[in-house]
Length: 483
View 1 (cartoon, one colour):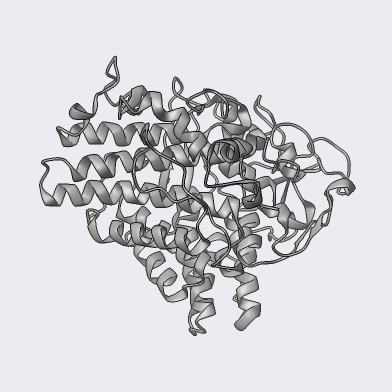
View 2: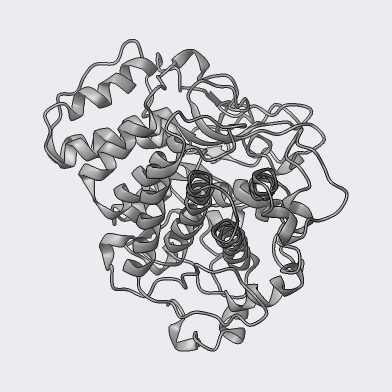
């Protein structure tokens, strides 16, 4: 974080920095940045800062000093998600953007992947801290303070949760392992970098922040835009964190709360995954043709029918998991000729590129919450765990047959269903391998050079700390580096 603090000093004179109030889609667009006294003089000023944070997540992101971001594979949240997507076993990118991630050759301390993830997520956490501090010192009512702080804490939790999952193994591997530096105050010119602490320290902050969020956000779920974190999103983030920690009861309850008021709708599954008004989307980022990330959009990589990078292919073993009647079976064989042993034989039409590039970005869907609930119930040996899973399966496939599995067989089935339902979105397949401490074994038509067989908790699964951080943070030295 110290390296990041150095980059931020110039911006701290303007809490909202130009991006903070530059607008989100149709929000007003001031011509200059907003000073701290203006941001925290009204709730509208704070809301403008929130819009800036959300815009920063989905835009063509670049760090303050221009040293990280700015490339197609380091453009905001889409880049973080796609990196995880291609590091697993179901998707293939032997060449093109994200190929180094697919090859697991992108974790060294001097690489832009590492700097991007560190800078992008710590910048987000810092902007949340600015709001938390500014609101605490404002003259707003106690109720307004709590709601604004709750949203900011949810953002801070999201950032730290993603950081710890990138720079260390899962919580269950060793809660006392070195974590990441935790920051709860805005960076300033006097700031010094923090030490790594432990994994437990990081999760203590994440759970405290999300507990506060779900207790203080508007219980009605009202929000101006679907990109904003409301109580349903906060419950969903809590469900993810509790699942990661193996807190099954808490994960189940949070997932149920997250999907309250939402329902499954298979009819919207094949809409190209580019429309935020999809009823199953709990959280997502809208795009407009004059405010897009253009070829950085996921569909540019997945869609092989519209001009784009057209670089993501699907492993044949994964394709074989889908029945013909499954609405998610959106695979095309032989578009580029060849045969099933060629990596380029299968593509998917799940993500469809809009010609104006205005593809909305999915961040959380109701189906994920069903799957978290099912997995938690299975771990708790609750008898209706299979029923929850089958509710999703039968919605996606009218010919689905309930397996009747219990115990570990049911858990394994749920993990496969998570891959089938959520592939290409937020990297569930790879992150579940990390979370469940499994081997990563590639089979099928992966190119021979990339048919990896990594052991559980492989060093290949975690990023190294950026060298710039080690060089500038007196509390982190070379001995603190990840192996």
